[in-house]
Amino acid sequence: MSEEQVIRVAVPCRACLSGEDLDWLGDGRSVSLALDLPTTVEVVPGAPSGAPEQAGSDWPSQVWAFLKERLPGTAGPAPAVRVASEAPSASGLSSSTALIVALFRAFAAAAAAAAAVVADGVAATAATDDATLVQWAYEFEFARFNGGGMDHLAVAEGGALLIDGRERGLPVVRERLEFPDDWGVVVVDSGTRKNTADHIRTVRAQLAAGDPALAAYRAEADRASGAAWAALRRHDHEALGAAMSRAHDAMRDHQGMSTPLLEELRALALRAAGLPLKLSGAGGGGSLVGVCPSGELPGVVARLADALSGPFPGARVIPTRAAPGSRSARAGERVGVSAAG
Image (cartoon, rainbow, N blue to C red; front, side, top):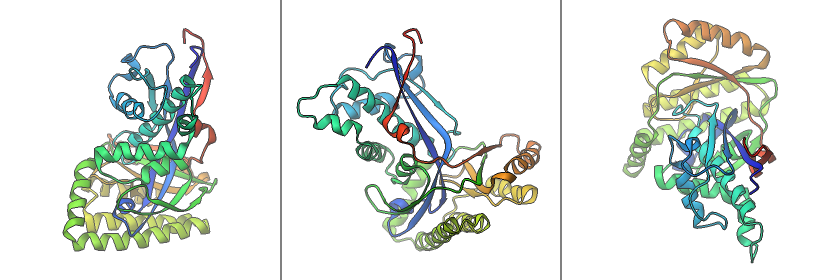
């Protein structure tokens, strides 16, 4: 890799519109939406490993170690990286998966540049094959958290996905749609962190025990996912909001995924802005998401922010939009910089 270049990769986060856990429970559908709140990774040429750009996270070194067993050009310590994210962390928007996918893409691009000539050419092909990188990112994260693959597909593919779950391995994308251009997305960050690891352990125990509450949740969440996808196909944001509310109610009533604070935020959003909100992701905290026409977005955001400012000072409103798939995001973008930069 030239010392005059930075490899930059941006990966969107995702909101789950319906069907939390169904991606790895199997026998159920989930609906995901990529959001334009990207996590950006830059591989910094010439900077030593362990430089300040890497401070606060060991994901870069762990991803690099994973790739060292699979790709040429990955000898030695991990390159230094700069990481930035527009998504709130630990909020149910898969910012951690976005970071991991971005690291895989960025490091693979750096390895391909370092291994410009490979004897048999096979490894070099794998380095630029995004499907392989997404599969590896799933395997990397599954080994640590034992979760599903909806997040990896959602942030890699962009747009809205209807996903068929599988108990092990990446789920299957049944259908993909571009989110309507005239719809906006509202994220309400509750300011409380989720704990997904404990949640996954609990639900896997329910699955092993044949818990009827989990069975009831799976059935209702799958129906909500079908309704949400039908609303997307009809370009009916009110029906989508109703389906998302149905999905949230299933999460709360059958699996206890919501909290009193989150329910208060949902009630406030309905009173102040007429906006139905759904919790995105499990784990007892994080962010709520809603959809409204783009022309109404500024007013909705203003009313929500005003209503939250008194009783919920730790919460914030984040207006955003859907993120479509991007060829440059998948391949990695090389940006010319000065040697000093």
